[in-house]
Length: 76
Length: 146
Image (cartoon, rainbow over all chains, first blue to last red; front, side, top):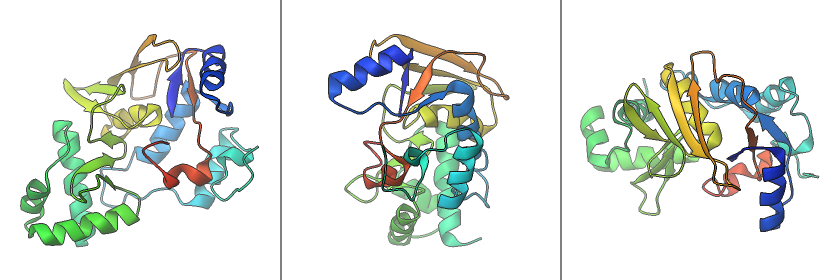
């Protein structure tokens, strides 16, 4: 889970390592993910999102393909 | 509050206060228990995916979003230096602490440095991107690689 300056830099990095290019996430989307996962982490009632919740969280952000589905075995 | 929750909170609060991973003994003192009981709690917390341990079973590699080891993802909050496990977790530290902070990292391809001020409402407009190589269903197969 890494930062890149641009889509072109992601493309170069994937090609250099022989990795598939995955869906890209903006900084605003990343902030939403970070707050959803971690804003209660220091509290007694904190818990990680469960798989069905994860799917809903990703879908609300427009991250709805199989790559983001914690139950999927079809990653494209 | 259960013993496991006390242990988890003691670990996370130590990270929040110091930026560094606690030793087993420090956590045992904090929860007023013997180290063997705390070690057993560590294993249960690992199974719940709230801790990642080194092979010795007692050194904390990850208490997400906090990292127990140094890397390129550095976050400064209120003059305390933290290491995050990844790009996602670098945003997660200000989110967990409910404090503004500055994220320092880099473009993984070019090495260009990233320095981003994170406010209570998130980052300013920014064209940088986040890329996750591992599908969500496989994140915990090897969470360190993920």
